Structure formats: C-alpha cells, structure tokens
Image (cartoon, rainbow, N blue to C red):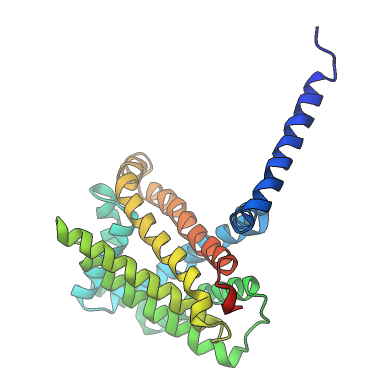
Length: 277
C-alpha cells in the first residue's frame, strides 16, 4: 500500500523537475524562454481578448459602413478579402455577402453622420493598439494632439490594404502562390508601419522589424490556416445556429488574429536587434 503522502511527493517532484527544466531553458535560450513567459502571462491573454472584442465591436462595423459608400468593385474587394481571411465559402460566404449587399439601403440607413460615428468609434481600436505598443516599449502615452490624426490615418490605410489583398489572392496555380506572397508582404509592411506610426516615431524602423515580420507573417499564416480549417467550422456553425454561428466563428478567428498582434508586439521587442536599443 502506498503511503498517504505518495501522490503529493510525486507531484512535488514533478513540479521541481519542471522548474529545473524551465531554469535550464532560460539559461540556454533566454529569448525563447522570455517569449514563452510573455505569451502565457495572464495580462497577455487579457489583452488578446480585449483586442478581439475591440475589432468585433468597432472595426468590423466600420468596415461595413465604409463599404456602403464605396464603388461596387471596391466593396466586392473588401468582401472577398474578409471571406478569404476567414476561409469561408458556401452558406457562410452568403451570410458575409449579406452584410455588404444592398448598397443603397445600407447607405441610406447609415447616412454620413453614421459613417462618421463609425469611423470615430473605430479609432478606439487604434488607441488600444497604441497603448499595447507603448506598454511593450516602456514608453509614456503619446500626446492626444499628436496621436488623433494618426488613429484615423491607420484606419484608412488598413481598409485600403484590406481592399487590395482580396484581388491578389484570387489567382490559381502559380499566381495563387505569388498572390499570397504579395499579400504577406503587404501585411509585413502594414505591421512595420503601424507601431512606427502609433509610437509617434519614438522607436526606429530597425528595432520594429521583428514585430513586423512576426505580426505580418503571422497574419498571413492565419489566412492560410483559415482556408484549410474555417470552411468546415464556419459552415457547420452557420448550418446549426444560423447567423449566430457566423458570429461564434468570427470571434474565435478574431481571438487568433488578436493573439498574433499582441504576441507579435511583445516578442518583437524581445527579439529586437541589440544595436537598435
């Protein structure tokens, strides 16, 4: 018969072994160990959920509102880009198209004032991104007068990149590979420029290169993974729960996207070149 303290001793031994292994990992590979600690920290997870919710509440309604005032060709590009990133097709794709169809009725319902409200609300996402980058780089908050215009500028550029990525990813064969490579390049450039803009140029381009690569390539990987996984997941959710199923799938996808942004910001700072400070 085992002693009453046997399981407790084994658990204590396992805990000690894990701590020792973690200590060796930190000694041999300090930067990967620091990235793992950062990614698993409760504050990091909280920020991922906050960014995902912010995108869902403000950025997506803003994209729909802006698309109502775009020419039909550009509106179709935005719809196609969203569908590609989500990797959705069939009934789920029809549900997404429903948000972007009905140009005249949607435009009348929103109105110019509604569009302005949506744009102003969407800047809350850029403000959150700015706070994330400032926190990672240990910088004080930027001045409101210097930041306000940058928040709106980022929204405009983000929508433009979203509209541009849809067509380049619509080829076949070699063109499809080239298109996704071009889309990944756009993402890297966007997420290289984003922290430089929101940090008010207080951090140099070289120091931000790891953040750009991790975030941009991570977003491209999410898009490719979505094409493989999300059609089944989203299609099943929509068939079982209707439009609410699309919302559930969208929130799951947004959480992954937010994780790439938040972890890319922290890991990029950890991996910055030593000479970049």
